[in-house]
Image (cartoon, rainbow, N blue to C red; front, side, top):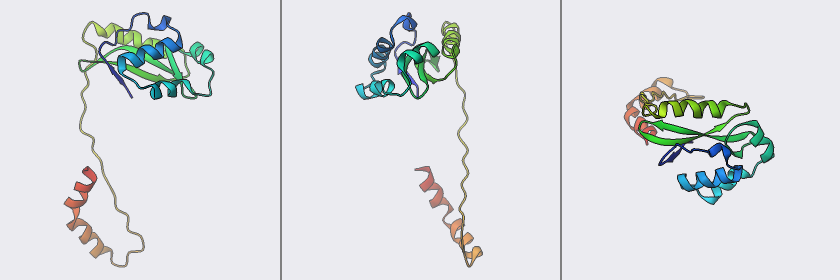
Length: 146
């Protein structure tokens, strides 16, 4: 998930050690020690992860990097990336930095459209079952919307 922060412009972030990056993000995003420990406790060696991608803050069997400079709908974010390829985090941070001066990114989303199905197995009277379900349609949809 994203990390909302007061200002996503973290100059010199890439120059910090992995541990100092973690501390910096914990401070600006209000993360708990437990969250920060989860980044550090992984099977991939931290030095190897730091050599694989930019801005490493932890590992998740792949290195976890932090893309900086993002403003989305007027809010600043640091975006976690889990990738195995070098330059992806740097490229995302660089493009976000270029958009920073123009106010960042604006999202436009539509409401999600979901469908549901009810499967009846070994039903002796499918017609009556269907009528019963349709009669309770509003109640069933209400339960799903909770």
